[in-house]
Image (cartoon, rainbow, N blue to C red; front, side):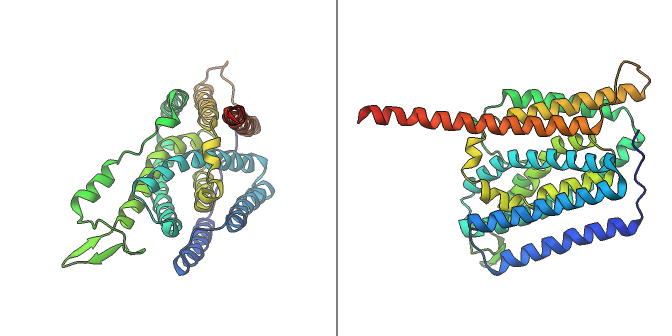
Length: 327
């Protein structure tokens, strides 16, 4: 049994303050120079955010022990991987609303900030619920196994973006212009109207909240510590903007990503159920060590990525063969 983390308020305040400072600086850079970032710029920023997360995790390993450090890394890698899968939908949203390329950074950043705020409330409610109702772990476990089964049967090629209820409400209640007006969120044409820029930001933020229905139970299956749940989610979301541009066409080549994530979610779901049974006194139900979980997650995602890239390369060669034969 991993001992609970007892953190003073100032650690929470310092952590949230640090995230706010980094995001504020990021927002300032985007606002002062709207543009589509270069490959070099994206690599630098993604490396920076990954280094921050790794440094934070190493600090946990040294200060709080391997159990909590391992839980953070397992949660962060899982959330980051789920975020990569979510980029498919973000790409659909950008295309659906025909967002000008130079403003896509701002849209993603605001959407990510909205998602962080909403996920914070979700995490607080979830942490309170799991401490009061142990049976929720059975519900979370079953939900993750069901989600994994749905991912296995899903077809990415037929994916389409459908507006959620929050977005439909905003579009119905607020008068909206037909065209973009730079990066402005509202304009005045006889009356105050919102622009498609605000609508697409709401779409990104609320869609990410729907993704949290999968990711929050998944990370609670790896750690019960609200601090680790929050920081893992925050680090996974913060570098998502640059990752969107860095991956670019690579997203289409990760053909087995959803299958790999389904294995990860199913594993965490089974882990949750087994641990709940163990705590309820079922002798044959083991507790799976966090290092085993970390190994399964990293191994599954590594194999998935390699197999995806191999299949994409093989398909590309096959597509060129008819062209070569015609010549």
